[in-house]
Length: 276
Image (cartoon, rainbow, N blue to C red; front, side):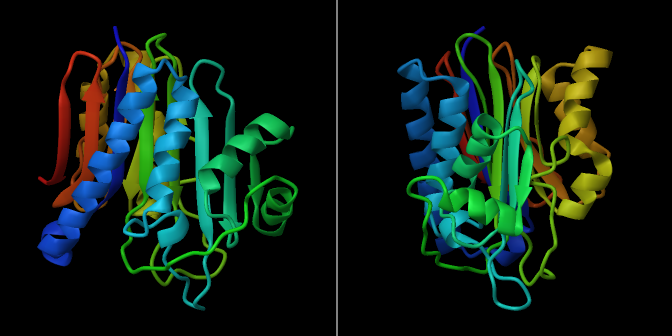
């Protein structure tokens, strides 16, 4: 047993739609965020803290579709969403419809910790954000549809998943994807933490993140077996995920041509990848 971390910057047809220059920029961002997460784990920060820290860094990178880099709706507006979940307690928080919050993942954590609710959206979420400190923002919209996410297990075996996105490019105003839906794009329990990415409607229909955990819980699968099974049963070209188990194993399967991804474990293993 030991700590482990896996993070992603989205899965899609990277080979066809992303230039080599863009891939290089994304890889630099992934390595930076992985280093921050590893350093925090080595400092014995909790899985909850590490997941939030890493996703905040991804949100702050305008190359990714979350936080500062969120894509636009069909009306040229921004609607961000995020969720975070702690496996040992199943506490969770989620937000949607944000337009003035630079780090939605931190607001999702505050929903979990400071309200009696799990999910706040649109005007209610914005009002809650204004009541907190340092939640104003300026964003730099882009056209890259990559959700970001992180799955972490700390040295005590606590699993946390965190996911954030600006949603689909040119989406209808008010559309909500898989990212803030617990069990779809994000989930954690005492066995694992899972953050999914890809086509949100497909991920919601398949309850991707929860299915990985359920296969481990009820079928005794390892995290790699469960993750590979779930992604293998999705329509090709629709999905990827990162996951960690309570005992420090990592899985990063996808059925697209690529997924921006990185991971590290306490025993020294490290990986950063983009294409299949």
